[in-house]
Image (cartoon, rainbow, N blue to C red):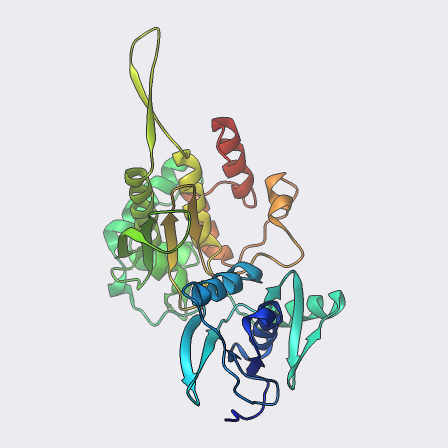
Length: 354
């Protein structure tokens, strides 16, 4: 049986012995077309030869792809029969290009994977960023009736108490206007994300039995505003991590200490929304493993910068949602821009937490 020819979105590999080459092709296809397919068990000319598939084969393929492509993707990997022979089919998609495979960026050209130079990668980022308008300042399609006035009043009370605002509450319309939360005379996306009755934002939370994303012992999904989602996420983590008890020798009082500082957890949760790419139809996630907590938000790290730049305090803040971050700053939900990662690291270091 012949399956046809390779294309810019379709790649063939003879066996999983060519898994690394397949991963490179996946990233290359994503960088040009955002989705594609890969088959193991088919020669380059389309001849189906089959692939030996063991008990762990599909899992190993999926894990290798997720581990070696950044930003991480989650492909659909399944066994299929072609001409009576077993093959592996990998379907993948992603909207956060450029994707790196083994630390390099490549682009699909015909049926080949072209390696990009550092200059080409930089130009790629510049073109991408120039096409992205600010989500948080864009019109939402909602009206003032969709704003929860009690949430807005509570926010203004906290912001005034913080000393970063001094606005007396008057009406939803006037306050949102003062906070630059209007677009075309109606609440913009930032206003809805923070204060709407139904903001259509969700967080998915799960506890996994081991160090791998395989078997979960609990899973939960909640919908709310950003402020409420942070509270829900914090409570979920507090209730599902380990705590140790320490007795104060002088007063004999019992002190309970979490395995991860809650201050760091809350900082990470707020940052996950301040830097979220809201144009990607994917929820923020909290995953609690036996050895770590992962707080995930869709969105790539700022080009030309690394986490280490911010851990030592030298990085200059780059906000995907500058207005949203400003609103969180007024209420002291986040502090000085660009210092979040350093505060998380400092807090964890003080507590002896990796």
